[in-house]
Length: 384
Ligand code: GTP
Ligand code: MG
Image (cartoon, rainbow, N blue to C red; front, side, top):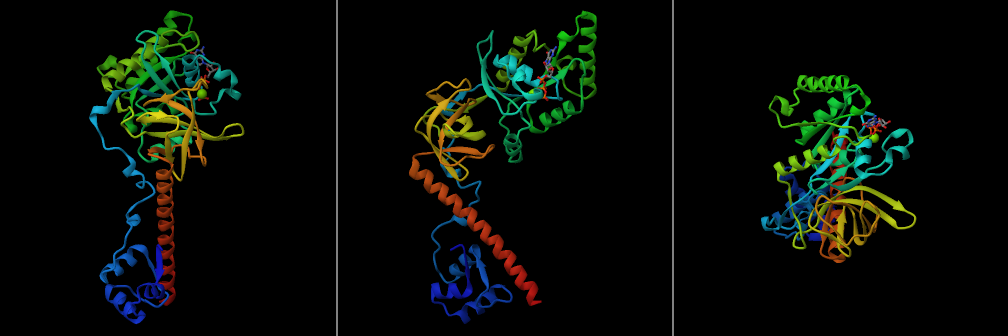
C-alpha cells in the first residue's frame, strides 16, 4: 500500500507499536499515535531503518516520467532529414485559413460557419518547384497546442506570420509575434490580400507600410539585414504562393531539420485531436515526431493504449506507414487519448498494459500522499 497507519505498519512488520511510536518520535515526527498515517516515502524510510527492503520504486516516478524508459536511446545513425512543421498565425480575418485552403486545395473557408476555423487540420503539401514536403498544422490556438506549450513542447518549426496588406499589424499580429519569439520558432512573413489593390502604386504603398510597421516592431526582416523573409501574396489569386512555399523550404534547409526514423527507432508523437466516432470508435490524429508508425504497432498515451488498426492520411486514404512530421488519423485506442498528450510505442500489448498500470499506480500514490499530508496537517491543527 502507498500509505499506512502506524498500527497497520506494526501489524505488517510485527514491530511493537510502542516501539514504532517511540522511534518515529525520535525521527522527528510529532503527535504520533497508533492511527498516525505515514505516506509511502516515510514508510520506506522507517522500514529501511529496520532493514526492511522495499521492492518497487514507483514513488520516485511521476505520471510524466513513467514512460521515459520506453524511449529508445538516441542513435545519430538513425537521423534522417524530415519535413518542416509549419503553423500559420496572425490577426483575425487576415487570411490564415484561406492560405491553408489554397495549399490544401479544398474548400474549408466556405464550409465554415462565419469563416471561423473549427478543428485542427494537419496536412502535407509537395512544393511545386522544389518538390519538397511541408507539413502544415492549422489552428495553433487550439487546446492541444496550449497543452503542449505548457509542457514546453514546441512541435512547430516555422511560423508563417500573416499580415493583411489592408490592415498591417494588428493586436493579434503582435501576440503571434510574441509567441513566435518566446517559442524560438523561425518566422516567414506573408503580406496577404495584395490582390485587393488593383492600382500598382497603391499596392506598393500598402506593402511598404507593412514593411515599415514591421521594422518599427523590430522584426528582423531581410531588408534590414535580418533573416525573416517577407513574401507579398494573394491566397485568392494564388499570386506568389509558390514563392511562399519555397521560402519555407529554404528556411528549413538552413535549420537542417532531422529526426530519428525507421524501424530501429521507438515511435514517438503527439495527439493533435481525438474523437469518438460512431462508425470507427476512438479515432485520433497523431503527429509522428520519431520512428515509424505502422499498423499493428502498440502505442501508449496517458492512461490508455492502442493497437493500431488503421492509418489514414489527411485525404482519408489508407496508408501503410507514417514517418516524422507526418500527421495521420489512427484507430484502435482502448479509451480516447487526450489532445496534446504525448504518445510512445510499446513492444506489445502486455508491455503497454504493464506501463499503463504502473502510471495509474503512480497517480494513485501521488493522490494519496497529498491526502495524507492534508490529513496530518488537520490533525496537527486539531492537536494544538
Ligand atoms: P480567423 O480564422 O477567423 O482568424 O480568420 P482567418 O485569418 O482564417 O481569415 P480567412 O482565411 O477566413 O479570411 C478572412 C476573409 O478574407 C475571407 O472572406 C477571405 O475570403 C478573405 N481573404 C483571405 N485571403 C485573401 C486574399 O488573399 N485576397 C482577398 N481578396 N481576400 C482574402
Ligand atoms: Mg481561420
